[in-house]
Length: 238
Image 1: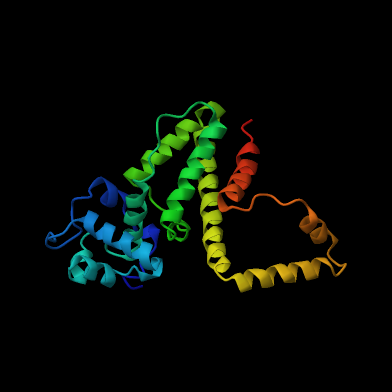
Image 2: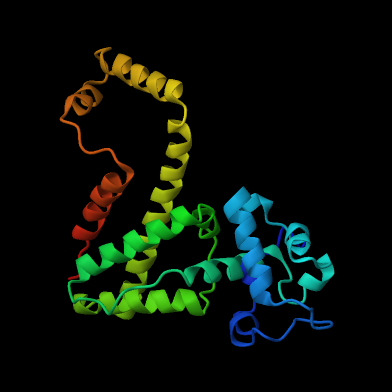
């Protein structure tokens, strides 16, 4: 497989990547930093989407030859690892957990949502297993501390965090896609007319009843909060 395509996270050495970050993989030390490479890749993804991030494009952004990038990021999968951890440094939490683990988890989820909306490529990047770097680990540490009052064992707490992150990533991915559709009023109106017609055909009584129910706030924030409440308030810790 090509270097731009990557060989998958299974080929990444986490010790080399995170414990010896200043050691180039091979060759001469380049005249730029791993931080600069990663920041350029993040800027590309933010502006044009994840598909725009190739080793060639990133090299052009930092003014380097493609081969020199491979000493720090030998393939795109490694670069994605660096990008995910780089932006995870933005996930700052004000103070320690309060002791109300459900409220603390909801705070974690809202932070993750805002973070992913700032970097809409993140949900897709997180679909592949990532090796947590220092910034990601700092946020994970806070989430695990928030779960301490539950009495869950370590494995269960990690599962809850993974479940929460997957929920937020899936919701934000859908939210971003829906926002793109809503920019077309004609499309939205056509969808509503279609649903009303289907509900009136007599063959979909459950849908008709659902559509006739009192409306709820439809802002993106309100919808996310409702879904999040259902998820976290329903978690069992016994």
